[in-house]
Structure formats: structure tokens, C-alpha cells
Amino acid sequence: MNKLEVGYAKVNINPALGIGIYGYYVPRYAKGFLDDLEASALALFCGERKVILLSVDTGAVAAEIAKKISEDIERETGVSKDCVFISATHSHTSPFLRKMDMFDADEEPINVYRAFFCRPVVDAAKLALADRKPARMGYAVGQAPERIAYIRRYKMKDGSTMTCPPINDPGIDYPLGTLDQRVNVLRFDREGAESIVLLNYGLHADTIGGELISADWPGWLRKTVRKTLDGVECMVLIGAQGDVGSTNVHPSGGDMNDTRISFDNEMKSPGMARFVGRALAGTVLQVYDKVHYIDVDSIEALHKEIKIPANIPSAEDLPLAHKYRDLHDAGRDAEIPYEGMELTTVVAEAVRMCNLENGPEYFRFDLMGVRIGSVALVGIPGEPFTEIGVQIKETDGFSVIMPCALVNGDEGYFPVQSAYDEGGYEARSSVFRSGVAETIIQGGREVLKDLL
Image: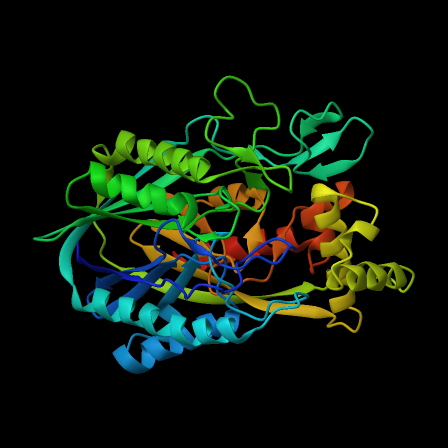
């Protein structure tokens, strides 16, 4: 028998101008707005059990901030902090929520925004809890359209590995990985209130660049769904996307319409965000009327701690790492013998080495599982490669499994074993030793087993 009730709310979380913008190893500061940032909340009820799903337009929510939000929600609403699932959309045109490591910048705007940020997110949860309505849930698995997503790591003809090689580089051989083009869609129909669509898909929200605040393609997706489907709201939970971007390294036809090539060799522009968001909205439209409705007679949430060895540098590597980091901190990137994404890679690797010079030996963090009837979410506090999501999805016992990136923390990239063997930006910058993917996959499967 269906016992599900659902509440929904969204709030604005725009920052003040001048704040540092998330992502890259080049300082950027907000000079204006392309569109609004929002936090949206979905409150799920089944009898006395309550779970809150939050989606926030930011690059990432650091673990300590997620912890504060969860504790504030528990204190102000009575919902257990262990039942709060906070997912960042990973927009690279949103504010930093932590110290701008390496950047010579005034941190005050970040501190001010950080203090502000928690309040509206908690308010969104409270408003969603107050919006409780009887509901039914349906699910569908759609297919993403062509030309919006690409594996961004490539084997080069000289045997090297490169993340985001230059467009039409003759040295490109083949991509190192396989896309998962499945788009998970949940539909919540509520009595006397708007319906809610929740979309889960693995793709970086990094299609714009520049210094204007924007929600990137998740904002365009939400906007398009709201305009196209009367009385329908939309939320985004980013999937496993650590090795997936929106740049076609061999563009043809209209691929370059309304876009440009950024400093790091990627296709970025407001037009790209619009294209990706609208295209994924098309996937929602294709499955929206044909979701499979199921009864939800129980919901559950749980956490599982996992332990990952740190990617500690060798003593031989540290002198060059310190040299590159010092040059970068001094604004002297021209003296580092790389350019484009290769420069970003060696700087990120140098930062990782310097930060881990004195350990720690291990990292510990939580995976979070949520079950809504026969649908499961697995929250991972960082950026897992596509293959991690694919293998977690293969776990038996559920109608749909939704791996979600950047949930309740931002611990960095989680590359698969082959990426460590091949090299490239993600593995070279990751603070985790090889084997992290296998640990997360096993942990995710154990979470799912415990949810059954």
C-alpha cells in the first residue's frame, strides 16, 4: 500500500558580486549574473519516517558545511541529521564555500557567503517539510541525446594520457572510458500541488566558464522543464561524472554554434549550458508521461564509513612540486613548461603533493544511502568516474539505482584503477591512492544491501 507523502521548496542562494568562483587553478571573481542560483528541497514522508533531499547550485558543499546544515535541520525540525542528503550540482560558475587554497585573494567575501549559505538551505528544508502532501512516485530510465557528453580523458598517439586535449589535436587516439547515457528520472505527483521531477545524470556542470554567476546546465534544465510542463518543478542530482565533460574534440556540423574554446581546451559558453539543459529536458519529456508508478510503503536512510589510503608523494617528487606550486602562487605560470590543460594538471598534482607531504596516511568519509520503496540513491562525497556508477547500478534488488556525486562533502576525484596506470589530470591530482574506486564500489554495494 502506498504511504508516501512529499513536500517541496526552492529558495534563492545568490552571492554578492566579487566573490571567488569555484573551479580551475586560475582565480575568477564574480562580475555579474547570467541566472539565479537556487537550493531545492524534497521532503519525503512515510509514516513517521522522514528523509530530506537537497540539491544546491554550488561547486561543492564541504563536509563541515554539510554537517552544520544537517545538524541545524535536526535542531530546528526534529528530522535526524542522518536523514539529510545534500547534493551539489557542481556548477563551475558558483561561489567557493571554503578557503581559496593557493589563491592570493581576500577571503572575506567567501566567509560572508559561507555564513549566509547555510540559512536559506535550512529554510528550504523547513519549507519542504511544511508542504507535506500525499503523493505517488513513478520512475523511468531515459537515454541522453547525442552531443552533450563525452569522456574527457584520451589516449594520445604518443602513448601519453591527456584530459581535455586541444580541439582537433592530431595526436588524439581514442577516449579512455565508456559513457553511461542512462538518465534516471523520478516523478512525484502530489495531491493538490505541483508535481516534482528529479533527474540523475553524470555530467560535469562546467559548460560556461567566465566570471558571471550561473547554475550552468542544471539551471537551464529546470527552467525548460518548468516552462514546458505546466505545474511541474524540477531538481537535479548529479551522477557519476568525474571523467565526463561536454566537449567534442572532433566537432562537426553545428557543434561550435554559440560556443568558444576556453583556456583549458573545452567548449564553454552560455549557449553550451542552454543546449545541454534543453537537450536533457527533452529526455525528461520523452519519459515523463510513461513512468512506471510504484507503491512506496517505506523509506530509509543510512551511512557507511569507508577508509581510503592517501596518495602520499615520494620524497624525490617534492622539490619539483614545491617549485611549481610556488611559481603558480606567485602568478608565474609562464615559467612552468606546460600550457592549457597540461599546465592545470601539473599544478594540481603539485598542490596535491605539497598538501600531503606530511600525511595523513588515510582518509575516512561516509557514503550515504537512501531508499524510496524500490528506488535507491547512493551518495558519494566527491567526483566518481563513470565506471563506479555503472558498477554500483549493477547491484540487484532495486528498480532503479541512482549514484549521486558530491553528496555531503567534496573529497575530490575518485578515479578507477586504469586511470592511475594511464595518468591524466584526475588521477594525478587525486588525494587518494589507486584502489579508491574499488573501495567505493564495494561500499556502495554494501550500502544497497543494508537498505534492502
